[in-house]
Length: 489
Image (cartoon, rainbow, N blue to C red):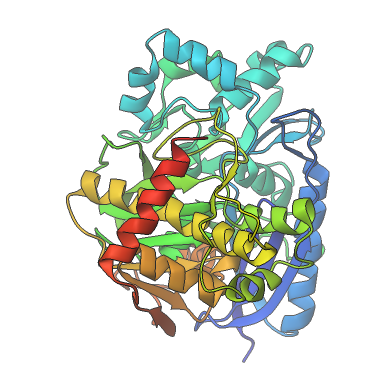
Protein backbone atom coordinates (compact mmCIF):
# COMPACT_ATOMS: atom_id res chain seq x y z
CA UNK A 1 0.00 0.00 0.00
CA UNK A 2 1.45 3.39 -1.01
CA UNK A 3 1.69 5.78 1.94
CA UNK A 4 -0.28 9.02 1.90
CA UNK A 5 2.09 11.81 2.90
CA UNK A 6 1.60 15.42 3.90
CA UNK A 7 4.24 17.89 2.74
CA UNK A 8 4.82 20.52 5.42
CA UNK A 9 6.81 23.59 4.34
CA UNK A 10 8.19 25.86 7.05
CA UNK A 11 9.68 28.95 5.40
CA UNK A 12 11.54 30.77 8.17
CA UNK A 13 13.80 33.77 8.61
CA UNK A 14 17.10 31.96 8.19
CA UNK A 15 16.04 28.98 6.10
CA UNK A 16 13.35 26.65 4.81
CA UNK A 17 12.46 23.25 6.26
CA UNK A 18 10.35 20.69 4.40
CA UNK A 19 8.95 17.62 6.14
CA UNK A 20 7.09 14.67 4.66
CA UNK A 21 4.76 13.31 7.35
CA UNK A 22 2.91 9.98 7.25
CA UNK A 23 -0.57 9.28 8.63
CA UNK A 24 0.89 8.98 12.16
CA UNK A 25 2.66 12.35 11.83
CA UNK A 26 6.02 10.57 11.76
CA UNK A 27 8.74 12.22 9.66
CA UNK A 28 9.46 10.19 6.54
CA UNK A 29 11.72 12.78 4.90
CA UNK A 30 13.30 16.10 5.84
CA UNK A 31 15.05 18.80 3.83
CA UNK A 32 16.57 22.12 4.84
CA UNK A 33 18.17 25.02 3.02
CA UNK A 34 19.52 28.26 4.47
CA UNK A 35 18.67 31.61 2.91
CA UNK A 36 20.90 34.70 3.00
CA UNK A 37 19.87 37.95 4.65
CA UNK A 38 21.09 41.37 3.55
CA UNK A 39 21.42 44.58 5.54
CA UNK A 40 21.62 47.40 2.97
CA UNK A 41 21.27 50.20 5.53
CA UNK A 42 21.19 50.53 9.32
CA UNK A 43 17.96 48.95 10.59
CA UNK A 44 17.13 47.40 7.21
CA UNK A 45 16.80 43.63 6.72
CA UNK A 46 15.95 42.12 3.33
CA UNK A 47 15.59 38.75 1.61
CA UNK A 48 15.87 37.89 -2.06
CA UNK A 49 12.44 36.41 -3.01
CA UNK A 50 14.05 34.12 -5.60
CA UNK A 51 16.42 32.78 -2.94
CA UNK A 52 13.39 32.00 -0.77
CA UNK A 53 11.72 30.15 -3.65
CA UNK A 54 14.85 28.19 -4.53
CA UNK A 55 15.27 27.19 -0.88
CA UNK A 56 11.74 25.78 -0.90
CA UNK A 57 12.39 23.76 -4.06
CA UNK A 58 15.68 22.39 -2.71
CA UNK A 59 14.25 21.50 0.71
CA UNK A 60 11.28 19.73 -0.87
CA UNK A 61 13.54 17.79 -3.24
CA UNK A 62 15.73 16.67 -0.33
CA UNK A 63 12.74 15.55 1.73
CA UNK A 64 11.30 13.72 -1.27
CA UNK A 65 14.56 11.87 -1.86
CA UNK A 66 14.71 10.78 1.79
CA UNK A 67 11.11 9.59 1.87
CA UNK A 68 11.44 7.38 -1.19
CA UNK A 69 7.98 6.01 -1.87
CA UNK A 70 4.74 7.70 -0.96
CA UNK A 71 2.17 9.99 -2.55
CA UNK A 72 1.85 13.60 -1.46
CA UNK A 73 -1.82 13.95 -0.55
CA UNK A 74 -1.65 17.62 0.41
CA UNK A 75 0.53 20.54 1.43
CA UNK A 76 0.69 22.70 4.55
CA UNK A 77 2.61 25.99 4.70
CA UNK A 78 4.00 27.90 7.65
CA UNK A 79 5.97 31.09 7.13
CA UNK A 80 7.77 34.05 8.66
CA UNK A 81 4.74 36.20 9.19
CA UNK A 82 5.30 39.94 8.85
CA UNK A 83 7.88 39.72 6.07
CA UNK A 84 6.29 41.24 2.98
CA UNK A 85 6.99 41.40 -0.73
CA UNK A 86 5.40 42.60 -3.94
CA UNK A 87 5.41 40.84 -7.31
CA UNK A 88 4.12 41.38 -10.82
CA UNK A 89 0.97 39.37 -11.48
CA UNK A 90 1.84 38.77 -15.12
CA UNK A 91 5.41 37.55 -14.65
CA UNK A 92 5.41 36.39 -11.01
CA UNK A 93 8.68 38.27 -10.50
CA UNK A 94 9.21 40.33 -7.36
CA UNK A 95 9.51 44.07 -7.91
CA UNK A 96 11.87 44.56 -4.94
CA UNK A 97 13.56 42.56 -2.18
CA UNK A 98 11.31 41.24 0.57
CA UNK A 99 11.27 43.47 3.65
CA UNK A 100 11.84 41.19 6.64
CA UNK A 101 9.86 41.36 9.89
CA UNK A 102 13.01 42.51 11.73
CA UNK A 103 13.32 45.59 9.48
CA UNK A 104 12.94 48.94 11.27
CA UNK A 105 12.84 51.38 8.33
CA UNK A 106 9.21 52.39 8.92
CA UNK A 107 9.77 53.54 12.49
CA UNK A 108 9.21 57.20 11.58
CA UNK A 109 5.94 56.35 9.78
CA UNK A 110 4.70 54.47 12.84
CA UNK A 111 5.67 57.35 15.10
CA UNK A 112 3.83 59.85 12.88
CA UNK A 113 0.67 57.74 12.99
CA UNK A 114 1.00 57.45 16.75
CA UNK A 115 1.51 61.20 17.10
CA UNK A 116 -1.67 61.71 15.08
CA UNK A 117 -3.56 59.75 17.74
CA UNK A 118 -4.25 56.74 15.54
CA UNK A 119 -2.71 53.90 17.53
CA UNK A 120 -5.98 53.17 19.38
CA UNK A 121 -7.80 53.00 16.04
CA UNK A 122 -5.42 50.33 14.78
CA UNK A 123 -5.37 48.43 18.07
CA UNK A 124 -9.16 48.21 18.35
CA UNK A 125 -9.49 46.64 14.92
CA UNK A 126 -6.28 44.64 14.54
CA UNK A 127 -5.14 43.90 18.10
CA UNK A 128 -1.70 45.26 17.13
CA UNK A 129 0.36 48.28 18.08
CA UNK A 130 1.94 50.72 15.65
CA UNK A 131 5.38 49.24 15.18
CA UNK A 132 7.62 48.70 12.13
CA UNK A 133 7.48 44.98 12.96
CA UNK A 134 4.16 44.63 11.11
CA UNK A 135 3.52 44.38 7.37
CA UNK A 136 1.24 47.31 6.61
CA UNK A 137 3.79 50.11 6.93
CA UNK A 138 6.28 48.01 4.95
CA UNK A 139 3.74 47.83 2.10
CA UNK A 140 3.27 51.58 2.33
CA UNK A 141 7.04 52.12 2.16
CA UNK A 142 7.31 50.08 -1.04
CA UNK A 143 4.42 52.00 -2.58
CA UNK A 144 6.02 55.32 -1.68
CA UNK A 145 9.58 54.48 -2.73
CA UNK A 146 9.35 52.43 -5.94
CA UNK A 147 8.56 54.54 -8.97
CA UNK A 148 5.20 53.73 -10.52
CA UNK A 149 4.33 51.03 -8.01
CA UNK A 150 1.33 52.81 -6.52
CA UNK A 151 -0.24 53.23 -9.96
CA UNK A 152 0.34 49.55 -10.71
CA UNK A 153 -1.09 48.54 -7.32
CA UNK A 154 -4.24 50.59 -7.80
CA UNK A 155 -4.69 49.01 -11.24
CA UNK A 156 -4.36 45.53 -9.69
CA UNK A 157 -1.33 44.53 -11.79
CA UNK A 158 0.90 43.79 -8.79
CA UNK A 159 0.32 41.65 -5.71
CA UNK A 160 1.31 42.41 -2.12
CA UNK A 161 1.58 39.51 0.25
CA UNK A 162 3.35 37.81 3.08
CA UNK A 163 5.48 34.78 2.28
CA UNK A 164 2.53 32.37 2.40
CA UNK A 165 0.81 34.28 -0.42
CA UNK A 166 3.98 34.25 -2.51
CA UNK A 167 4.51 30.50 -2.06
CA UNK A 168 0.90 29.62 -2.87
CA UNK A 169 1.12 31.83 -5.97
CA UNK A 170 4.27 30.06 -7.15
CA UNK A 171 3.08 26.54 -6.22
CA UNK A 172 -0.21 27.09 -8.06
CA UNK A 173 1.40 28.49 -11.18
CA UNK A 174 0.03 31.97 -10.47
CA UNK A 175 -3.59 30.87 -10.23
CA UNK A 176 -4.25 31.50 -6.52
CA UNK A 177 -3.69 34.71 -4.57
CA UNK A 178 -4.67 34.07 -0.95
CA UNK A 179 -3.53 34.49 2.64
CA UNK A 180 -4.88 32.80 5.74
CA UNK A 181 -6.42 34.67 8.67
CA UNK A 182 -3.39 34.21 10.95
CA UNK A 183 -1.00 35.85 8.50
CA UNK A 184 -3.50 38.54 7.57
CA UNK A 185 -3.86 39.40 11.25
CA UNK A 186 -0.20 40.52 11.28
CA UNK A 187 -0.53 43.26 8.65
CA UNK A 188 -2.22 46.13 10.57
CA UNK A 189 -4.97 45.89 7.94
CA UNK A 190 -7.25 43.04 9.10
CA UNK A 191 -10.24 43.48 11.36
CA UNK A 192 -9.74 40.46 13.61
CA UNK A 193 -13.38 40.50 14.67
CA UNK A 194 -14.90 39.96 11.23
CA UNK A 195 -11.73 38.48 9.61
CA UNK A 196 -11.82 40.89 6.66
CA UNK A 197 -9.61 43.71 5.41
CA UNK A 198 -10.53 46.98 7.08
CA UNK A 199 -11.02 49.61 4.33
CA UNK A 200 -10.46 52.50 6.76
CA UNK A 201 -7.07 51.16 7.82
CA UNK A 202 -6.14 50.53 4.19
CA UNK A 203 -6.89 54.20 3.52
CA UNK A 204 -4.87 55.36 6.53
CA UNK A 205 -1.83 53.47 5.23
CA UNK A 206 -2.65 54.22 1.57
CA UNK A 207 -2.53 50.51 0.66
CA UNK A 208 -4.89 49.72 -2.25
CA UNK A 209 -7.24 46.83 -1.48
CA UNK A 210 -6.86 45.71 -5.12
CA UNK A 211 -3.30 44.62 -4.33
CA UNK A 212 -4.22 42.46 -1.33
CA UNK A 213 -4.92 38.70 -1.33
CA UNK A 214 -8.20 36.99 -0.53
CA UNK A 215 -8.43 36.05 3.17
CA UNK A 216 -9.17 32.36 3.77
CA UNK A 217 -9.35 29.89 6.71
CA UNK A 218 -6.18 28.22 7.96
CA UNK A 219 -7.44 24.69 7.18
CA UNK A 220 -9.15 23.64 3.96
CA UNK A 221 -8.20 23.33 0.27
CA UNK A 222 -7.39 26.77 -1.13
CA UNK A 223 -5.28 26.02 -4.24
CA UNK A 224 -3.77 23.19 -6.26
CA UNK A 225 -0.25 22.80 -7.57
CA UNK A 226 0.75 23.30 -11.17
CA UNK A 227 4.06 22.85 -12.96
CA UNK A 228 6.11 21.54 -10.01
CA UNK A 229 8.82 18.91 -10.59
CA UNK A 230 8.57 17.22 -7.19
CA UNK A 231 4.81 17.52 -6.71
CA UNK A 232 2.07 16.20 -8.97
CA UNK A 233 -0.23 18.73 -10.62
CA UNK A 234 -3.51 19.09 -8.77
CA UNK A 235 -2.10 18.41 -5.29
CA UNK A 236 -4.18 20.48 -2.85
CA UNK A 237 -2.69 23.13 -0.60
CA UNK A 238 -4.89 22.64 2.45
CA UNK A 239 -3.24 24.28 5.45
CA UNK A 240 -1.64 27.71 5.99
CA UNK A 241 -0.60 29.54 9.15
CA UNK A 242 1.98 32.00 10.31
CA UNK A 243 4.91 30.20 11.88
CA UNK A 244 4.04 30.98 15.50
CA UNK A 245 0.39 30.04 15.15
CA UNK A 246 1.45 26.85 13.36
CA UNK A 247 3.76 26.01 16.27
CA UNK A 248 0.90 26.61 18.74
CA UNK A 249 -1.26 24.20 16.74
CA UNK A 250 1.57 21.69 16.35
CA UNK A 251 2.13 21.65 20.11
CA UNK A 252 -1.54 20.80 20.60
CA UNK A 253 -2.33 24.07 22.42
CA UNK A 254 -5.98 23.87 21.46
CA UNK A 255 -7.63 24.84 24.78
CA UNK A 256 -7.79 28.28 26.38
CA UNK A 257 -4.81 28.77 28.69
CA UNK A 258 -2.47 26.48 26.72
CA UNK A 259 0.77 28.33 25.95
CA UNK A 260 4.00 27.76 24.06
CA UNK A 261 7.25 29.56 23.37
CA UNK A 262 9.21 29.10 20.16
CA UNK A 263 12.93 29.73 20.49
CA UNK A 264 14.02 30.76 17.03
CA UNK A 265 15.68 33.90 15.70
CA UNK A 266 13.41 35.64 18.20
CA UNK A 267 11.35 34.21 21.05
CA UNK A 268 7.61 34.06 20.44
CA UNK A 269 5.21 33.29 23.25
CA UNK A 270 1.54 32.62 22.51
CA UNK A 271 -1.40 31.65 24.68
CA UNK A 272 -4.64 30.28 23.26
CA UNK A 273 -7.45 32.45 24.68
CA UNK A 274 -10.39 30.78 22.91
CA UNK A 275 -13.13 32.06 20.64
CA UNK A 276 -12.91 35.77 21.50
CA UNK A 277 -9.88 38.07 21.25
CA UNK A 278 -8.44 39.60 24.42
CA UNK A 279 -7.08 43.08 23.83
CA UNK A 280 -4.00 43.51 25.96
CA UNK A 281 -3.56 46.18 28.63
CA UNK A 282 0.05 45.16 29.28
CA UNK A 283 1.90 45.61 26.02
CA UNK A 284 1.00 42.34 24.31
CA UNK A 285 -0.82 41.68 21.05
CA UNK A 286 -4.20 40.17 20.24
CA UNK A 287 -3.95 37.96 17.19
CA UNK A 288 -5.86 35.30 15.28
CA UNK A 289 -4.54 31.85 16.12
CA UNK A 290 -6.34 29.98 13.31
CA UNK A 291 -9.67 29.36 11.64
CA UNK A 292 -10.51 25.68 11.13
CA UNK A 293 -13.66 23.51 10.97
CA UNK A 294 -13.58 23.75 14.79
CA UNK A 295 -14.11 27.51 14.55
CA UNK A 296 -11.84 30.52 15.10
CA UNK A 297 -9.39 30.67 17.98
CA UNK A 298 -7.50 33.75 19.13
CA UNK A 299 -4.24 34.17 21.01
CA UNK A 300 -2.35 36.62 23.13
CA UNK A 301 1.19 37.06 21.90
CA UNK A 302 4.43 38.53 23.09
CA UNK A 303 7.53 38.59 20.90
CA UNK A 304 11.15 39.19 21.81
CA UNK A 305 12.95 40.14 18.62
CA UNK A 306 16.30 38.59 19.57
CA UNK A 307 16.75 35.09 21.02
CA UNK A 308 18.67 32.63 18.87
CA UNK A 309 20.01 35.68 17.03
CA UNK A 310 21.87 36.59 20.22
CA UNK A 311 23.73 33.28 20.11
CA UNK A 312 24.48 33.94 16.43
CA UNK A 313 25.94 37.30 17.49
CA UNK A 314 28.19 35.58 20.04
CA UNK A 315 29.45 33.48 17.11
CA UNK A 316 29.58 36.01 14.27
CA UNK A 317 29.97 39.32 16.10
CA UNK A 318 32.13 38.52 19.11
CA UNK A 319 33.70 35.31 17.82
CA UNK A 320 33.69 33.65 21.27
CA UNK A 321 32.08 30.48 19.87
CA UNK A 322 32.47 28.77 16.50
CA UNK A 323 28.97 27.23 16.37
CA UNK A 324 25.68 27.88 18.14
CA UNK A 325 25.69 24.58 20.10
CA UNK A 326 29.01 25.60 21.70
CA UNK A 327 27.15 28.29 23.65
CA UNK A 328 25.77 25.71 26.08
CA UNK A 329 29.16 24.29 27.02
CA UNK A 330 30.78 27.72 27.32
CA UNK A 331 27.93 29.02 29.51
CA UNK A 332 28.09 25.88 31.67
CA UNK A 333 31.82 26.43 32.28
CA UNK A 334 30.95 29.04 34.94
CA UNK A 335 28.46 28.65 37.83
CA UNK A 336 26.77 32.02 37.25
CA UNK A 337 27.08 35.20 35.17
CA UNK A 338 29.58 36.81 37.53
CA UNK A 339 27.27 39.82 37.87
CA UNK A 340 27.05 40.38 34.09
CA UNK A 341 23.65 41.17 32.56
CA UNK A 342 22.96 41.33 28.82
CA UNK A 343 20.03 43.24 27.35
CA UNK A 344 19.62 41.83 23.81
CA UNK A 345 18.10 44.94 22.23
CA UNK A 346 19.98 44.41 18.97
CA UNK A 347 16.83 45.33 17.03
CA UNK A 348 15.11 47.37 19.71
CA UNK A 349 12.90 45.85 22.41
CA UNK A 350 9.63 44.14 21.50
CA UNK A 351 6.78 43.22 23.82
CA UNK A 352 5.92 44.17 26.47
CA UNK A 353 8.31 47.17 26.35
CA UNK A 354 7.98 48.29 22.68
CA UNK A 355 11.11 50.44 22.59
CA UNK A 356 12.40 50.42 19.01
CA UNK A 357 15.06 53.00 19.97
CA UNK A 358 16.63 50.75 22.64
CA UNK A 359 20.06 49.30 21.92
CA UNK A 360 21.88 46.30 23.31
CA UNK A 361 23.79 46.43 26.56
CA UNK A 362 26.35 44.31 28.42
CA UNK A 363 26.32 45.55 32.01
CA UNK A 364 28.38 44.59 35.05
CA UNK A 365 31.68 43.69 33.39
CA UNK A 366 34.68 43.46 35.71
CA UNK A 367 38.34 42.47 35.38
CA UNK A 368 37.30 38.90 36.18
CA UNK A 369 34.66 38.68 33.43
CA UNK A 370 35.30 35.84 30.97
CA UNK A 371 33.76 34.67 27.73
CA UNK A 372 31.89 32.08 29.80
CA UNK A 373 30.22 34.78 31.89
CA UNK A 374 29.12 36.66 28.76
CA UNK A 375 27.78 33.48 27.16
CA UNK A 376 25.86 32.56 30.30
CA UNK A 377 24.48 36.10 30.62
CA UNK A 378 23.36 35.94 26.97
CA UNK A 379 21.40 32.72 27.59
CA UNK A 380 19.94 34.22 30.76
CA UNK A 381 18.87 37.32 28.81
CA UNK A 382 16.87 35.18 26.40
CA UNK A 383 14.83 33.63 29.21
CA UNK A 384 14.48 36.86 31.19
CA UNK A 385 12.71 38.44 28.22
CA UNK A 386 10.26 35.55 28.32
CA UNK A 387 9.59 36.06 32.03
CA UNK A 388 8.43 39.61 31.24
CA UNK A 389 6.18 38.25 28.49
CA UNK A 390 4.62 35.52 30.65
CA UNK A 391 3.86 37.87 33.52
CA UNK A 392 2.15 40.34 31.17
CA UNK A 393 0.22 37.48 29.58
CA UNK A 394 -0.99 36.19 32.94
CA UNK A 395 -2.27 39.65 33.89
CA UNK A 396 -4.15 40.04 30.61
CA UNK A 397 -5.65 36.54 30.62
CA UNK A 398 -6.46 36.50 34.33
CA UNK A 399 -4.88 33.07 34.77
CA UNK A 400 -1.48 31.65 35.64
CA UNK A 401 0.58 29.60 33.21
CA UNK A 402 1.28 26.36 35.07
CA UNK A 403 3.56 24.94 32.38
CA UNK A 404 5.08 26.29 29.19
CA UNK A 405 5.58 24.18 26.07
CA UNK A 406 8.69 25.00 24.06
CA UNK A 407 10.03 24.31 20.58
CA UNK A 408 12.43 25.73 18.01
CA UNK A 409 16.12 25.19 17.44
CA UNK A 410 17.38 26.78 20.68
CA UNK A 411 14.96 24.65 22.72
CA UNK A 412 17.43 21.77 22.33
CA UNK A 413 19.79 23.63 24.70
CA UNK A 414 19.24 21.91 28.07
CA UNK A 415 20.93 24.67 30.06
CA UNK A 416 18.73 27.31 28.42
CA UNK A 417 15.58 25.31 29.23
CA UNK A 418 16.65 24.81 32.86
CA UNK A 419 17.32 28.55 33.13
CA UNK A 420 13.83 29.20 31.76
CA UNK A 421 12.25 26.90 34.35
CA UNK A 422 14.30 28.47 37.16
CA UNK A 423 13.58 32.10 36.31
CA UNK A 424 9.95 31.58 35.33
CA UNK A 425 9.25 29.35 38.32
CA UNK A 426 7.20 26.86 36.31
CA UNK A 427 7.70 23.61 34.41
CA UNK A 428 9.07 23.76 30.89
CA UNK A 429 7.77 20.99 28.61
CA UNK A 430 9.84 20.15 25.54
CA UNK A 431 8.62 17.61 22.96
CA UNK A 432 11.08 15.14 21.48
CA UNK A 433 10.20 16.61 18.07
CA UNK A 434 10.96 20.33 18.22
CA UNK A 435 9.86 20.95 14.60
CA UNK A 436 6.49 22.12 15.94
CA UNK A 437 6.02 24.78 13.27
CA UNK A 438 6.26 22.33 10.38
CA UNK A 439 4.22 19.80 12.35
CA UNK A 440 1.48 22.40 12.85
CA UNK A 441 1.42 23.19 9.12
CA UNK A 442 1.12 19.48 8.39
CA UNK A 443 -1.64 18.99 10.95
CA UNK A 444 -3.62 21.92 9.54
CA UNK A 445 -3.33 20.43 6.05
CA UNK A 446 -4.43 17.01 7.33
CA UNK A 447 -7.39 18.66 9.03
CA UNK A 448 -8.23 20.58 5.87
CA UNK A 449 -8.19 17.35 3.85
CA UNK A 450 -10.35 15.49 6.35
CA UNK A 451 -7.49 13.19 7.36
CA UNK A 452 -7.63 14.43 10.95
CA UNK A 453 -10.82 14.79 12.94
CA UNK A 454 -11.80 18.32 13.99
CA UNK A 455 -12.35 16.85 17.47
CA UNK A 456 -8.82 15.51 17.96
CA UNK A 457 -6.91 17.33 20.70
CA UNK A 458 -3.47 16.92 19.17
CA UNK A 459 -0.62 14.46 18.89
CA UNK A 460 0.63 12.56 21.92
CA UNK A 461 4.18 13.90 21.86
CA UNK A 462 7.02 12.44 23.90
CA UNK A 463 8.33 15.19 26.17
CA UNK A 464 11.13 16.18 28.53
CA UNK A 465 10.15 18.30 31.54
CA UNK A 466 12.44 20.81 33.25
CA UNK A 467 11.41 21.67 36.83
CA UNK A 468 12.44 24.86 38.69
CA UNK A 469 15.44 24.33 40.97
CA UNK A 470 16.28 27.72 42.49
CA UNK A 471 14.78 29.42 45.54
CA UNK A 472 12.33 32.31 45.09
CA UNK A 473 14.79 34.74 46.74
CA UNK A 474 17.48 33.97 44.16
CA UNK A 475 14.95 34.26 41.37
CA UNK A 476 13.87 37.71 42.55
CA UNK A 477 17.47 38.88 42.91
CA UNK A 478 18.23 37.97 39.28
CA UNK A 479 14.99 39.55 38.07
CA UNK A 480 15.83 42.77 39.92
CA UNK A 481 19.24 42.88 38.23
CA UNK A 482 17.49 42.44 34.87
CA UNK A 483 15.06 45.28 35.55
CA UNK A 484 17.95 47.56 36.50
CA UNK A 485 19.78 46.77 33.23
CA UNK A 486 16.61 47.37 31.18
CA UNK A 487 16.32 50.84 32.64
CA UNK A 488 19.84 51.65 31.44
CA UNK A 489 19.50 50.76 27.75
